[in-house]
Structure formats: C-alpha cells, structure tokens
Image 1 (cartoon, rainbow, N blue to C red):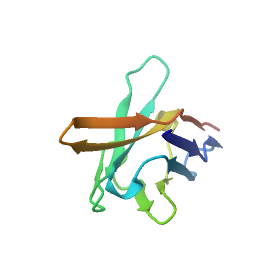
Image 2 (image 1 turned 180 degrees about the vertical axis):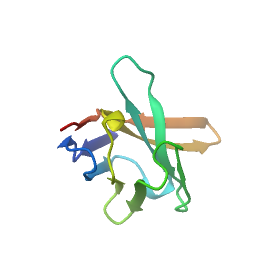
Image 3 (image 1 turned 90 degrees about the horizontal axis):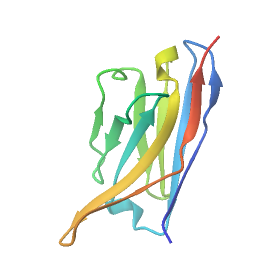
Length: 119
C-alpha cells in the first residue's frame, strides 16, 4: 500500500519560514519524481516545485528564490523549505510521487498539509 504523508504545515507570519516534509512508503522512492503542489481556497491546484529521481529541480515563478525542494532517498523523504513567505503562499500543500514505465504514467498523492501565512 502506497502512502505519502506530508507534515510541517502551520501558521507563520509574513517573511517567516517553514519546512514541509513528505515521507513515502510502499514505493521505490528513489526512482520517483516528486512534486509539491498547492491549492488555495477557490483556486485550482498549482505546481510549486519538482525534483526528479536524479535530483534536478524546477520551480514555479512565484516561488523561485524563496522555496527549495530537496530529497533524501535514504529516508524516503522530500522536503520543501519555504523562506520569505507571503500571504499568497497560504494553501493546502500536497506532495505527489510519479514515475513513467512501460505501463505508462503512475502517480500517488498525499493528503495535504495546511500552510497559513498571516500576521
């Protein structure tokens, strides 16, 4: 059974920092690309950052220079360090693990963790 569990969300003041974690089980973690997504109330889910199995990263323009995605394959965990946070970063953050095989694309989602940026 595949499980992705996000943690580390909470309330932070503007300009503050948080670090989210996504821990995986039930998959060969090292061969999966991992993405962090977020969904604010009334808005569509959007991609925040991705990291490939090889460690290449990509970021949404809105978080470039502020957020850093990293992975520790020995712990089956991906992190999202968020600095200089803004109220518009408020959302539920989800992690996604995906891979492509001869059977096509397969992916899994976590349950999400709430991040609120407010004074």
